[in-house]
Image (cartoon, rainbow, N blue to C red; front, side, top):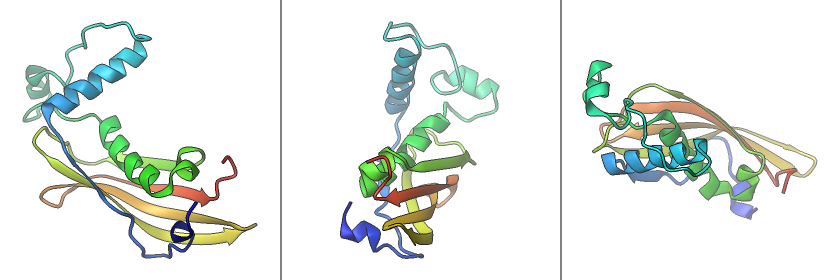
Length: 153
C-alpha cells in the first residue's frame, strides 16, 4: 500500500494501460487457456471465432476477435498495477463486453474512482473501468472495488 493509493479521491483517474492487439497475441492467449483446460497437455485449439477466420466470418464478424477474457485481463492488469496485492488478493472486477476487439486494434484500459469510503483504517475505492479502442469506442465497461489495505494481505 502506498500513501498515493489511499489518497485517491472521487474523480481521480488510474494510470491507463495501452495494448496493441495482434492475431498472434490472440492465438497465444487462446493456446494458454487451452493448456490450462487440458492440464498442460498440448492439444490443437478448436476452431472458434478467436483463432479461425472462416468461423468468425460465419458468425458475422469481419475477422477473428479477442476473447472477453483477454479484454478482462487488460483491465485487471491496470488494477493490479495500481493496487498490487491489495487488488490481487481481495479486489473485485465485473465487466460487460460491448464491442469486438480485433487483431490490429490498440486498446487502452481506463479507471476512475466513483466512490471512496473509510472504515476501520481501511479505504475502499469503487471504480468505473473500461477498455477503449483506438477510435474511442468503449469495447468493455465495468466496475471494480479495492480495499486498502486488503483484509487478505
